[in-house]
Amino acid sequence: MISNLAVLPIVIPLIAGILATLFHKKLSVVRIFSQIITVLNTVMVAYILWYIHQNGTVILESGDWMAPFGIVLVGDMLSMSLVLTTNIVALASVFFAPHSLNQKQEEFYFYTFYFLLVSGVSGAFITGDLFNLFVFFEVLLMASYAMIILGGGKVQLRESIKYVLINLFSSMLFVTTVAFIYSVVGTVNMAQIAQRVGEEEQTGILTTIGILLFFVFGTKAALFPLYYWLPKPYIVPNPVVSALFGALLTKVGIYSIVRVFSLIFVYETDITHQLFIWIAGFTLIFGAIGALSTNNIKLVVAYNIIPAVGFMLVGIGVYNSTGMSGTVYYLIHDMIIKAALFFIVGAITYLAGTSDLRKMQGLIHHYPLLGWLLFISAFVLAGIPPFSGFIGKLLLLQGAVEADEIMIAIIGLAVSLLILLSMMRIFIRGFWGEKDEKVVANKAAAKKFVMPIAFLLIFSIVLGVGAEWFIPGIESIGNDLMNPAIYIESVLKE
Image 1 (cartoon, rainbow, N blue to C red):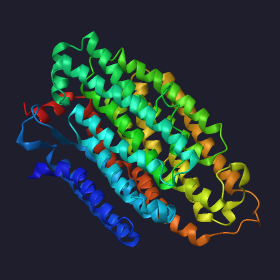
Image 2: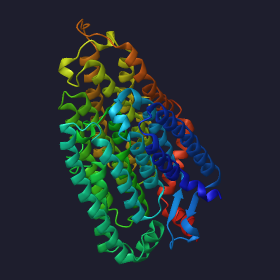
Image 3: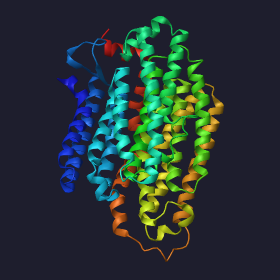
Image 4: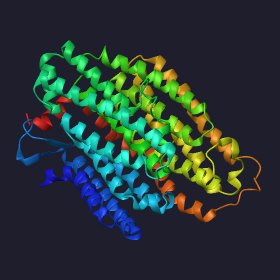
């Protein structure tokens, strides 16, 4: 019965999404229902993570078919930590949504798609099967296709076409690559793939398949040079949808790279992981340049997704336990802070009536709390001590130095300053300065936006200030990622 815990983070939101369709126009009911279910799901996932921490990995073999013959769900410290972070973001989002969405958007099955997205993301983190990873990618993408067009604006339709086409292409390549790897090793169970790739000593064809998988995941994670699709599709939907996209979707791509290239393709690191370091460097540089190149505050935050995934790729590329720990820590940190930042810029856009930084000034006189939340968020994002961004970057840079990758460490430090500059431009030009007497403050609306933002920032601050509580667990995850035998033995029970 304990093994059934692994499926609950997938099934509960899936059932809740189906139920939400039955009363989608009764907004007061569907809001309360969604909020209660999300709270309960978050508490349940927190309990599962605690159980795994105390008792070890939880494996669910569907239909009692033993791995590798059946489909398995693997609840380990890495996957369940990310599922918990997903639910924390979802919890803030479900309370932010009523103040962000209009009635038409909420009634058009927003909460159904919201639960479907959470279920798909959770499934992608938990699955132990490469083909099912593809399936859960499609589940979360179907939900995102519906959410991106909520409201039906012309710009949303234009960007949604681009978003759908890019993801259709990467999905076709994904399923084709899965077919390739099955034809070579005869299985799609990730633990058994890892075992057989080791037996074959990762021949040239397997390395090529690994690079194709990286191309798929790199497209979804928005790594250089595959990030060209990202910024605008993430800013055209409603702010709560942007927050869910920015916090969750690219992170599933990064998680997939972490899992596959720490478990399966670990025998030709001079080829694969060295390539990752180069790509990480370019991703950091071009993402920071993008964030500095625009006066649209939503685009500033969207572009800052790109250097963040670049930092995460650094830890994978240097391929040591410190770097892997840094990637995991930074991944959790970035999921939370990106959601908070999208909430903040969405609130600013609503209250100021524009997202153009050139048309704002002195907002701190009207909305001081929102301004200081932005100020703190900028420091968290840039990695200023003692916030969570600093802890993650410290581990990543330490891992780079241990691997003698000094140049990527220097690039990372320089880009951190550029990230801080891009965010402080919003604070200085939008909030600082003389009071604009033409602005009529809507303080009642501002108060409604503040609570979900503060909720996420509290987690970010605790993750940094209380780092000594979390680092042992994160380092344990990093050590496990560097020892694929642990995962293989827990799944295949060898």
